Amino acid sequence: MTSNNAVTNENSTWPSTGIAWYALAILFIAYTFSFADRFILSLLIEPIKQDLQLSDTKISLLHGFAFAIFYTVMGIPIGRLADKYNRRSIIALGVATWSLMTAVCGITRGYWQLFAARVGVGVGEAALSPAAYSMIADLFPPQKLGRALSVYTTGAFVGAGLAFIIGGTVIAAITSTPEITLPVVGTIRSWQAAFFIVGLPGLIVAALMYTVREPVRHINSASGSDLVSMTEVFAYVRARWRVFGTHYLGFSLLGVVFNGITAWTPAFLSRSFDMSVGQSGPTIGALILVFGTAGIIVGGWLTDYLGRKGFVDGAMRTGLVAGIGCIPFAVLVPFMPTLQWVLVIYCPLLFFASFGFGAAAAALQQVTPNRMRGMVSAFYLFFLNLIGIGLGPTIIALITDYVFHDDQAVGFSLAIMAGCSGLLAALFLWKGLKPFRAEVAKQ
Image 1 (cartoon, helix red, strand yellow):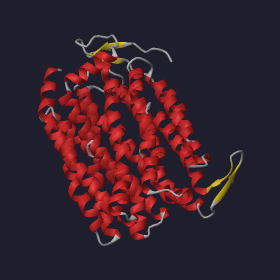
Image 2 (cartoon, helix red, strand yellow):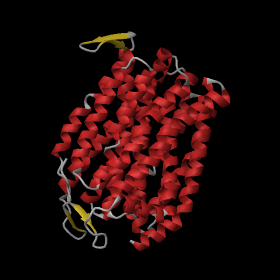
Image 3 (cartoon, one colour):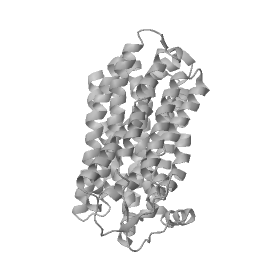
Image 4 (cartoon, helix red, strand yellow):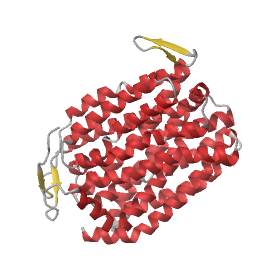
């Protein structure tokens, strides 16, 4: 991996519109695949639980903690590499790694082997977003950054949606027989084959990354062109702990809502309404595609709109709207009398659960010098994924297993988790508005 220290002044020419949007399109595809690999497990909860004799809590650790443990830890050193080395190559290597490790999930023979493979998926995916955020900030000028980052972030919801749609359809087809025999691999359970189908195409995406041109780094005249030390980055964040602390915690709690919902909704629909994976997968996927994607796009538009109206804290305000918007719909979920009403409530719930994530990335760029963006983004992803992915699914499982002691109560567990997390997210982001405005004024 070669160093990429080429920089230019903030007033220099930006890449052409075609080059910028082509690069964003490939990054979007990579992000889409990352979420497809990540969320396929949600559809496999019941067969894995049955075959491996697991509790909801153990399943939740596969979905959340196993993935998040190294995803969070590796994100910070990889963010450091993204501030110094070729970001395109970092992303390509990461895509190849997580794709292969997703396929490895399909040949595991027990709980701890599957746990280890999920850890490997997290290691690979840690390479993507810190480098991608940094690249996008060098592809688009500031007045277009909120929109560009929101488009990139929609890959999460497109990927999650496709994982449910394609995964549900494939799983329904292959689970007609309990075992499948594959060349070289041998005989595996039918649910294991889903990991091969989802994981291996990602190798094509890794190759596509090499068609993207590494952008020149734009710096402002005050920040200089030398790579800052790790100590300086920590000192920068620590000195602005009110800004970064409220941002990291607020948006991470929104991550708890989204990850908890997506992890346990298939099980909720199966247990409460006897809805099969073949039915629930495409249904949930379509809702995520339409309303999750709409939420992130409208959130990005609102961030840019507020900026044009003079609200320099527009990105934080967008997150605040997301947190407040989640609460009433989350609380209503377990009280809906029919499946149709549950799905109606899920439309605005998924809309607001996704609303703030493009704004989260845009806010960081506003208060971070270019040469620190990879590291500061990695800090954000550390909290987002440790709290959002690591805790979101597990909080629901713990409430189900140890409060209600009833698998059928998962809908109430989901409502408690999402309602409380949305409220806490709104409170943190509200507390962060004033220090955020003060920090933007200093830039």
